[in-house]
Each structure stands twice: as C-alpha cells, then as structure tokens.
Image 1: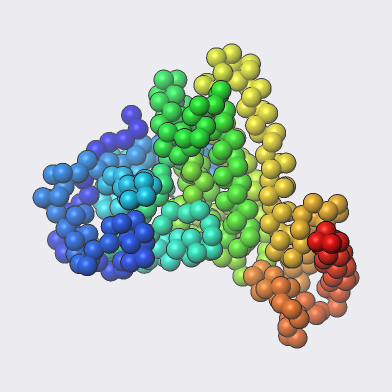
Image 2: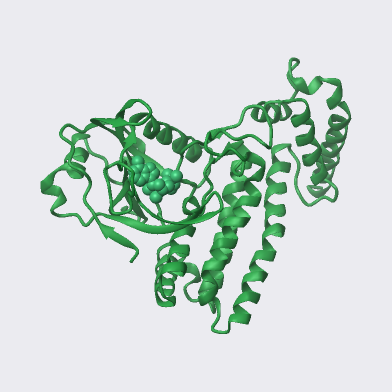
Length: 397
Ligand code: AMP
Ligand code: MG
C-alpha cells in the first residue's frame, strides 16, 4: 500500500544539464561520462532492470487532510555508498504516476535548477537536507502559464518517508501497516532505538528533536520553507521539497514568498508553531501503536508534545545567543534576542547583515546598528559580552 511500481518516462533527447561532481564522488557514483547517467535513467534496456516506484502518502496541506503520493517523482532505488550509507535516488519531474491526479508529472528546468541551488546552499550552511545530484534537461516543453523548458532533478535523500506517510498508514491502513512502517523507518533511520523498550515512543522523540533542530537552523539563516505541509516534513529531519522558498532579506516575521500562501500560514515567524502542529499530526498518527491501552497511549503522546516547547526554547535561544556571541545558560539573556529582533523589525533591518555587523571586531561605520534607536540595546549587549568573557577568564583561571 505504500508504493506503486512505475518507470520514468522515456524522453527522446534528455541531456545532462548540471552534474554535481563533488556529490557524485561522495556517493561513489562518479563517472567520466555524464551520459552514463542518462543511459541509466532513460533507456529501455536499463528500465528492464530497475524496480522504480512512486510513494503513496497523505498529508495536511494548508491545514486540510488530503490523500497524496508522488505525482511527479519516481524513486529509482536505494544506493549504498562504500562507507555503507543508504540513500534514495529520486527523479523529480520524470512523468506521471498513479498519484498524479490532474497533473502532468513534469517540472520546469527553471524550478529544478532553483531546487538544486537552494538545497546545495542549505547543505553548505550546515543544514541536514536532501541534495541535488543533477539537473537533466528533457528537451520537451512543459505547459504552465507559459511554455517552458522541461527539467528533471536527481534528488538524493536518506529517506523520503514523511509525516504524511504515517498519516496515510494511520488513516487508510490497519494498525499492522502502521507497525510495519514504524519498524521499517526505525531500521532505516534510527537503528539506535530499535532495542529500546518502546521504539515507537522513542521515534516520536527522535522526530521532535530532529525537526526542531532543522527549523532552528532555518531561523538561523533566515530561511522560509514556504510549503510546510505535513507531506513535506521528513521523518529523517532532512529539509526537502524546495518550492516557493527563499532566504529573507529585511527581517519581518510575517514574511512569505509563496503566492499561494495568502494567509501567511507558513511565514518566517510561524515556522516554529507550524512544525509543532506538524509534529502533533505525527504523534496523532502513531497513537494506535504507542501502547495497547489507549489511555496510556494518549498520556505518552501528550507527554511528548509537552516536551516540545522546552526543547524548542533551549535549542532556539542557544542558537540565537551564539549568533550574537553569547553562551546560553545565563539568566535573563534570552530577552536580548527578543529585543534585538523587535528592533530589527521596527527599524526594517537586514537579517543576515545585522548579525554579520554585530560579529565584527568593530561594527562597520555605515551599519544601521549605529542608529540612535539601537543604542540602549547595544549597551546592554556589550555589557553581556563583557560579563561573559569575564566569566570565561575566571573559568580558565
Ligand atoms: P508539493 O507541493 O510539491 O509537495 O506537491 C504536492 C502534491 O502534488 C504531491 O503529491 C506532488 O507529487 C503533486 N504534484 C505537484 N506537481 C505535480 C505535477 N506537475 N504533476 C503531478 N503531480 C504533481
Ligand atoms: Mg511535496
């Protein structure tokens, strides 16, 4: 019930457009001739030997439950590197599947290049993410508002299992299906919890921690995902599905870049609340297998959800304080972060540049940090920095 077999479309003249050489090296799939990939992905001969498939899933899109599935993505298979790491290799934009509904199963070259660029940027910003092995030009037009060039992204990810996969199992399968998915996921992603007393509960905590870490990283770099539907929330904690996402310039928690997000559900400042909401959908999906007694199940789920805010606060403020040169753990420091963000919002300051300026030995002369409105905060911050370096000095004797 979790997949259906499907072959990628056979294009007449597919062409390697952009190949990620360092990544192909790291995955042990490098080749002197990029056309080898084209033959592997798009020839009848090679299709005979592959069991490629589209995944079934469901999910909450903008708050509403929907039955979904890979409508334009096909997993070619799993690749195991020489160092024994396992990855899905997926083609995105390679034709229709049984989950395509009215869609054409295609992608534009432009949007796949954008996903390549952003996912690789995220990787080099130290964020756990899907990666882009290649972009292929299909040399076939794609019809959107205008006629566009078609493209295919070769996406690499530890696993494409998402919160929506669990929602699918919970809503449309039997408890045994949910159990099978849970066992598989743990074996695939979190072997360390396999022997624990209640692996399903341990999985909850894994996902809570991983997803909080990811979104904390987004807040670090000013990233707005744009489509935080539960089908785009991975169980591995990898950020993926780069659509109408962007890196924010001027700090505004209400910022959105997606034209379809009219209400700002997935704005920058809503991301922490939304990831908590998505995790709640995950917890809900797991309820039937957390414990044989449904009352205890509910207790375990509530306990896990109640941990969210504490973990979020610790990781988020820890990261933000590091961003302004402070160590967390001293009372009253978190307010410095909140006040700084308020100032940045009111004074319409650039997110990245403000932190950059603050991190310089001497704040650059032209920086808006020198504006009068900033002065009281700056004094407080300098004081906190001095205090913390004094403490460091004392500690190191
Ligand atoms: P996304 O917003 O990219 O997460 O996609 C939501 C759902 O729509 C997923 O099930 C996609 O596979 C499907 N989808 C998006 N674009 C297309 C397309 N061009 N053809 C078929 N299905 C699509
Ligand atoms: Mg998606």
